[in-house]
Image 1 (cartoon, helix red, strand yellow):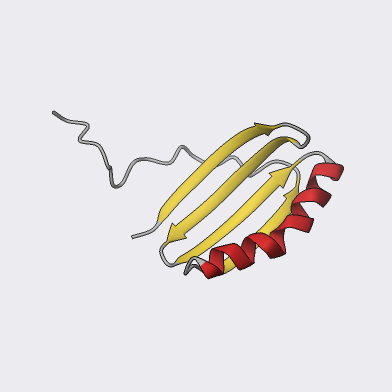
Image 2 (spheres, helix red, strand yellow):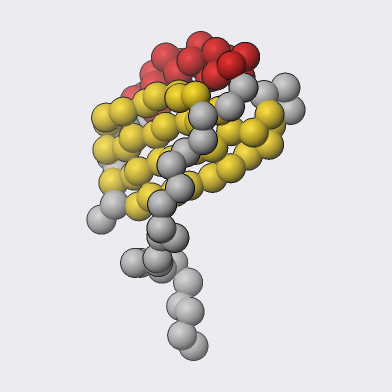
Length: 88
């Protein structure tokens, strides 16, 4: 099973960062998006250390990237598997 997680965070010192993570443990791919060039530079500087920490935790990091702009807006992801019983 593969999970997809999309987040938008407002971080002190960095500003708005969008995250698109695709997780099918142990495989994962994560893309960070920022519209601020300085923030993008900071994200790029942190990627090697993040990759190392994820690999040390047992993850197979297929893709880890930071891009300028906004994450592509797609259709709303529907819940395919739920950790919570939505019907009772």
